[in-house]
Structure formats: structure tokens, C-alpha cells
Amino acid sequence: MSKFSPRNILKVIIEIFTKIFTEAGRLMETIDILRTNELFKDLSEDELNNLASLTSRKSVPKNTLVLSEGDISSSMYLVSSGKLNVTLANEEGREIILTTLQAGDHFGELSLIDDEPRSANVIALEKCEFIILHRADFLNLLKQNSTLAIGVIKYLCERVRFMTSITQGLALLDVYGRLSKLLYSLAEPDEQGVLQVKLPLTHKEIAARVGSSREMISRIISELEKGRYLTIEHKIITITKKLPSAW
Image 1 (cartoon, rainbow, N blue to C red):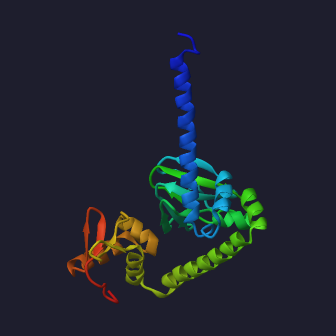
Image 2: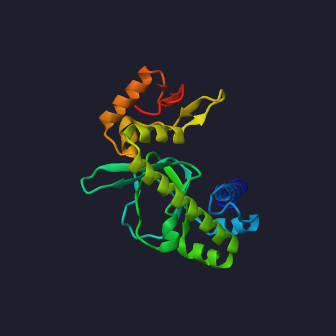
């Protein structure tokens, strides 16, 4: 059969249009993610389109170390799909989970601004896809756009407040206080207004987030279940009544 037969020509046309529609869909998805991001939410549609055209995409499998503390790189990652942990480890190898990221979140933004080594580890908990913005493109936009510059200043202020809150929690609260604060920060109301933590967390992961041992966390959660303050079903933590002020 000739490569110029109607069937082959139709196949080529379909492939071309499929590629065009796929790329257009990805571009629209990128714009939607940028539009809801704290750094870029005040940009106009034209500015968002321009920014989206400068990004690239990358996928990684589960358990990939996406960034390592001390790495030299200068790109910001916006999470299109998947979940990741942001962690730190001390000299003894004890790990603290700073936060868990999911679709719509981002990381690596500090290196866009200060070009310093990475300040934490980022590990994929499942297959993830990212939208990547490089420092040179970001700085060129920043020089030309005062709206973006103001957005960066606001974001940095929010980060300072966030880190101050974490520091206060570690310094001033006991293990139970930090656990209670974590549960309330992760919980969202369901249809009946009952608070639920739907992010599946093991006791080990909770311990890493609050700077404690798994045994201590297991003991506290067990006591809270016995007191009917919370229930755990299918890895969903439901806060059934106000947690006690102390344990």
C-alpha cells in the first residue's frame, strides 16, 4: 500500500490533530494551575499564557528523590498530579516531615529568588507529574512585571509566618499539643461538617511531622480513640469531638 494512500493520509491527519489537542489541553491545565498558585494568581490572562509557554513538564515514578537538601539547581516545580513529602534529616538520620504536597502545590520556589542550594528533600509518594519553571525565565518576567514582584513579596511574608508557626509549635508545645495542632491543620469538614483528615498517614509519618517517636504517637492516638475523640476507618481520621487541651 502506498504511503500516500487515503488511509495513511487520514492516519497522519488524526495523529497531528491528536497531538495539537493534547498540547492545547496541557497548556490549559498549566494555566489553570498557575492561576491558583499564590505567586501567580494576580497575573492577567495574557501574562498567564506567556508564563505557561515558558514551562516544561516532567514525570517521576513513586519513591523518587526529586530534590535533595544541598542540591544546586534553580527551578520551581508545580505539582500537576501525585503526592510528595518534604523532609529534613539530622546528623543521626532522624527524619522530620515538614509537609505533604499534592496537586496544585509547589516547591523549589526559593531557588528561583536566591539561587542557593536546596533547603530540604522532596520525595515522591506516588507517580508524580510536574510543571517546571526555570530561574532565568522567572527573573526576566519579574523584572518586567510589578504585579508578579508584589506577589513574590506577599508569598515570602506568608512563608515567614508559616515557619514562625512551626518553630513556635516545636519550641512551646509538647508532643500532644503538636499532634493536636497537626490534626486540626490537616482536617477538613465533610458534608455534615465533621472534621476529617483524609490524607492517609501512618503513625511513623505523623511522628516524623511532629518530632516524636512512633510509639508515643501510637499511645496518644490509642487513648484518643478510647476516649471517643476520634475514629480511624479506611485510613481516614475523623475528629468526633473537640480534642482535649492537654493529654
